[in-house]
Image 1 (spheres, rainbow, N blue to C red):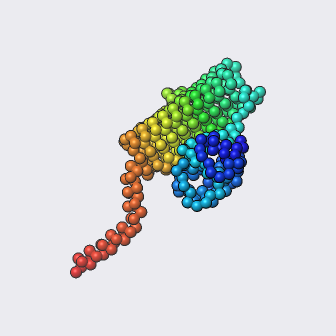
Image 2 (cartoon, rainbow, N blue to C red):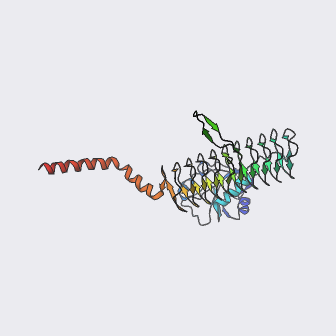
Image 3 (cartoon, rainbow, N blue to C red):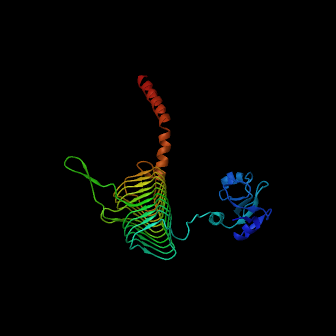
Length: 345
């Protein structure tokens, strides 16, 4: 899409100053802007870049007043983030495969299809699979027998969906995610050899869930592993067997949730967080990156940090003391010498 500044401002229901005829062909980051692009300023700490960016247009809040001359045309809007998200969608190339089913897809007899679905080349759809209308399946996707795929689902290349998995409407699954593999379940026999525990459960993704690239969600041992409506799982996240994640919860990259734990609604889990098995994380809890959580004793809305994780503010206070330990040691040694000297006197 190519559009000029005046048209862009009208599209965003904003007000512009500068050359309205300047053509815009895409978005850019404010500190890496190039001519012909539009960028945005939402966080005041990046304001210095507004005066140096090479982008041709700059989206700002309606109350923004520049402190120095600007090279870029200004477009003032009510919601800067909303405007940029809208533009990224408009300018973005969604790269959708051609509508319809590729001749090079392998479809089992008895697979149930709805209207207007797309299935790319070399994808394999097993017997008993159902796929809702408007769903897009990119090339090289595997969907195991009996899986149920809802309406308007987007499944990117290389995804592997094991048998019996249930995926709700509007879900997005990014490349190379694996949904429904066996959990890490073994028992030692009398010789100490590990014997695999069979898994007969499934994975359920409720509607509007998004799963990142290379994420893995294990199926339940006897029951299910479930990701609640609207939750977002980042790249490289491991969700173990029997885990239940609540609604509208977000889990950042490289986090891991051990078996049979549960996470409440609207929780926020930072990157590389480790959550032990068989515990419950309450609603609206926030866990900072690289924390390790071994207990479910924390109440709704708690903020956790550290390893093992404790209350966020307690951790910051403790860390402030920890950093001063070398100085404290010197002071204590000095005091001990003074006390010894006084005793000697």
